[in-house]
Image (cartoon, rainbow, N blue to C red):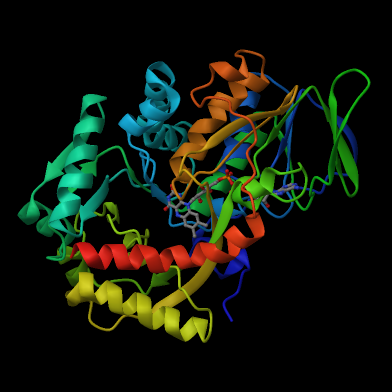
Length: 431
Ligand SMILES: Cc1cc2nc3c(=O)[nH]c(=O)nc-3n(C[C@H](O)[C@H](O)[C@H](O)COP(=O)(O)OP(=O)(O)OC[C@H]3O[C@@H](n4cnc5c(N)ncnc54)[C@H](O)[C@@H]3O)c2cc1C
């Protein structure tokens, strides 16, 4: 069995301790109540507190115990499928370009926050590289994405086969594009650092405090109840993403939570590191069944994969991921994984994130589609502008849409893992 406990992750073993937090007990009045203590909720709280707005976060588990503390830590300033032209096609010229601008700057937002608040999270702004596994993907993905992001002023480069091979230390790819503003962090340490910075500026963060209900108050405000307390607030931000529960009807049915595994190798020798990703970029390739990895501060590779079948999971997963890492980097030899953990990635049907006004004074965003480290952090200042009353919700970078729960959600959840089979077929067909 693979532990679903956050403490199984390499990030938990390496992160500084979280700031001290309590359960919410009794009533508390704030301007803004935030549900969810991941990047979205904590970045919103930090930006609100910085502008002097009284706010409190209630988190069901511990800081970062949702996707924020479990992910691969790649800080990627793109969406997984939606390129700038698709954003414009979906949202219109003006809104599409504004959203693309938010995404373009999102990695810089993360690294700027790390510097401004001196967050100890092993941050490396070494760039993010997307290598293409077939010649078709060079044209369809690498060249097109490079051109679109270059036109928007992103710090990007296109790499031919030879440049890609020397950057990666692998002959497995036909070309790549690189975004220099990307990189990687210890994501749990970053979440804890955001919480520390937010509480330092006056925000309250309560853990082990699941929001059980949200009720309208006679004065037009809202009451967020937890088992032992309640927050009364003028505005509420729900930042529960793929870990959404039944707090708001229909919300959790907007995303399909896809179970994904992460694992960390033993530290690589100095010699190996000279040939394998010597520039320490984060990398995720063009496959649907994504191949990805990045270094930790102590020179492990963190990678992972989903699996179609769950039988004999631990052994099969280790063998499967080791074999595919060896195919990319034969110089690795025998690979041993020290840590293995898992989490839910929230996928929407069209791979676009959503912003909703659930009721007057209650906003949420959902659906980062595996690209939430940078995006969720960058949504914080956006949501804070609305929650502080400095902008209308429809003035934010992500257009407001009605809640659209996926029909037959339970079935979609069950079928989600078979998408992997389809992706593998498509990946293989192009080769
Ligand atoms: C295995 C994995 C690998 C990934 N790799 C990457 C990557 O390398 N790069 C990248 O950009 N993205 C990656 N992602 C996606 C990224 O982690 C997420 O998009 C991001 O962390 C979302 O942050 P969030 O704050 O919106 O949500 P979360 O971090 O999931 O936070 C939501 C929080 O809400 C809490 N909650 C839920 N219900 C309630 C309630 N009723 N009351 C109180 N609290 C509640 C949960 O406990 C949770 O802590 C990955 C995700 C996973 C799972």
